[in-house]
Image (cartoon, rainbow, N blue to C red; front, side, top):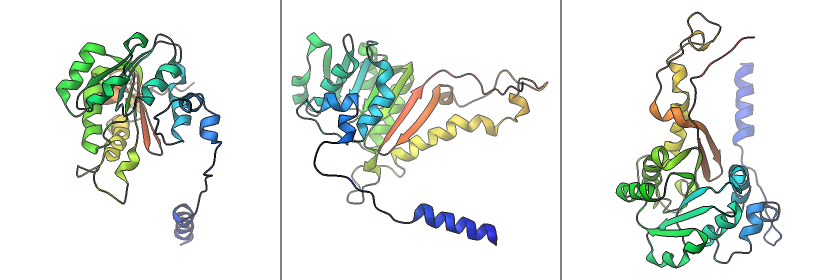
Length: 259
């Protein structure tokens, strides 16, 4: 009875409604205290959730001045293309894809900024992008925000289009939650459901083996294990508000060592 009461109290604490506040007038800490924010604020035509800049700095800073190849799905007014070029520095290659042919005006080949016109849900188009420009160090999906498009783009690009050591970042997952429209939820399950499932794939190996099987000290140690294919490359799946970042690394089997 005591545990039940404790659990109920904890549930009430976690789930009770509260308020958080923000200020309407600048300066905005998310911009002023981040490298990406300070670059972006001087680029006209931008449209960003302010808390994205801390995410960008955290996930992308290790690529600065390493000449990364960057693919962004969704060009809009070209502000992000300019952001990435300035953020990653000289030698970086920036490619944006969009359905709108007007976006071609935002490319600048002399600066290694390019735009291709096509549909992010078209696997043949994405394969052509990989063949011509890939693989990429960073892929950012800021496209249609449709659940089906986010999923098919990931499945088409993650394996062959993203380098080992790269980051695949999907923005605007809040579209799976808007109460005012169902436009983006075009599947029985959402893209958030899909990306959460990657955590199950990442850890499924533990359902098939015992701790002894994975213990280097054990006589039963197995140096080869059977896993779901995608889990070989799922180093991390990190959720932020409205964003998921998937880091690709070729992993060893899980091993535990007692010393």
